[in-house]
Amino acid sequence: MIHDLILKNRSIRRFKQQSTIKRETLEQLVELARLSPSGSNLQPLRFYLSNQGEINNRIFETLAWAGYLKDWPGPAEGERPAAYIAILTDENSPKPPEYDVGIAAQSILLGAVEKGLGGCVIGSVKREKLKEIIDLPGNLKIALVIALGEPAEQVVVDDIPAGESIRYYRDEKDVHHVPKIKTSDLIINR
Image 1 (cartoon, rainbow, N blue to C red):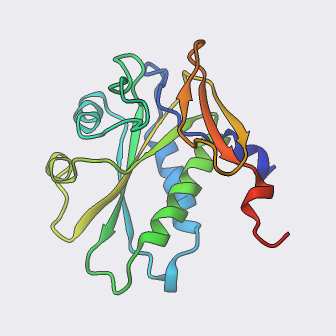
Image 2: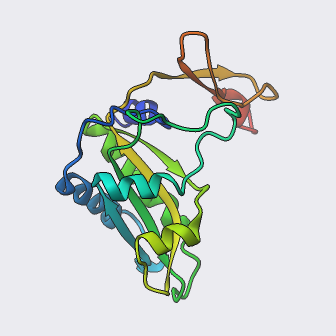
């Protein structure tokens, strides 16, 4: 059921690094993005896939993790992603592709959850450095990076009323909490 997939689709930031993700699995996730809606059917997105240790290490160094967790520098060795999918945009596209990027990212993440994986969309990227590492052609820009792997943390959703803090946090048992405003507070015409 889609509700269950979306509920399980939390931003996972700690992974079982020793678990591998096959290239074929990454290609299946990109297939979901390919089949997703695209504005004017322009299909301006391209993808860079990595499931290899050395390139993963280099990609990891270009990413910033969990802005609300100020004292946490990101996943420790052994908890890092097993794979990455970088979503790229073509700067020659006649229309801005940002909606396509969001739709593609959600499709990839839902597909990952269905396969028992977890992921995290990362927008805080040292783009110039990453572009150099993955040797992108000049017309392609990095929109975001999706980190993927087998989850090594528990993430729960906490319903909150509008106006309370939306900052995610980890409790004393290291459970990651994600506050979400109640549906009844989001609908304005009751």
